[in-house]
Length: 406
Ligand SMILES: Cc1ncc(COP(=O)(O)O)c(C=O)c1O
Image (cartoon, rainbow, N blue to C red; front, side, top):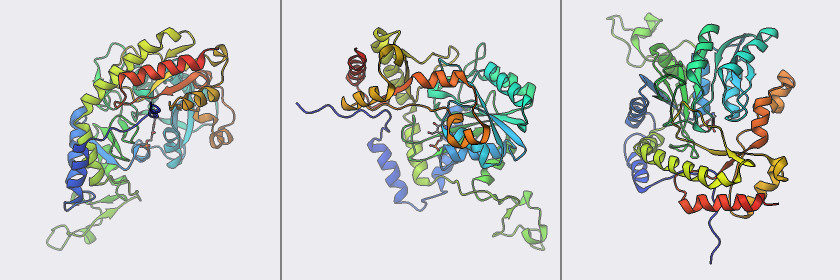
């Protein structure tokens, strides 16, 4: 019998229709900034019920664009939960703002209204510049309590930018509120998504920012395209922009502030569009696999538990993370990961709290964020993607059981 195939912790699922969609673009007239960009944006906006969806080259670019549109600048700061990927914090630094790290719930890894309040109180006691924005992160695909967070944000005049890179397709919001699709921005100014191959739908690399605010959408669009303004109504240099008869000059564009080239290609958008058409199938399969994992690891409690569930949310999980009491299990995380790897099972840690990265330690000193540290000390992401068979899930649970046996 051959060795069982290696199970990666995350993986894209590409079908022949995805390949055909990309080939169609390659054989057409546009490779970048063509009709598939608008089609992908329109379809994404429709699915999440947002007024605008602005595509960009990846989720990190989307966070950078959103940080700019939120008015983060030098002399301001952003509240960022420490339990996240680097980019959520880095986007504030890209625009010269400081980062105020917030703690998270130790069992879900999510920013809460209380940990946001605590971060604001800590910032008020230091010489951190005035907080201007907060970036709740929907870790693993579960949403934060957006109702509670937006209440705190309103009281403190904060712009809310959801880092929804893990949460394509998740229904969330908060206790007592009607569920809405993540990206509808019912309780935020903007939501940022990623289409990296391990995410729920992929466009290769890719990102999207959704908003219901016309001015923010216009700013996001300019920022991703060098800061260029092509709309004659917005031109400020009339002599340059218009002919003597008042007609706009067809070649003319204006730049008030430099932007970046964060455009997404037609090739990527065609793939993203084709993948979006399968979102409900991917979501259903992810939910089945998560439920099977919940059952399969139940006998390992209390040593191993799934991450605490957000009661207000119906998640399409991006990652299936468990919390392991390594001390009680008598094995350290590295040793367990190596044992699982030897059994053909890939795992990953999401994430080392960002405040513990050398760059941020040097900038802000050592911080006490016990919730983030406690989550980090126990978390491990198991293989999780729609291509897994039920038997793969059982194989992972069995391998975990064997690896943890004393
Ligand atoms: C929480 C979070 N934010 C932001 C990003 C950045 O997205 P991208 O890889 O598309 O730049 C990621 C991607 O891994 C992420 O997980």
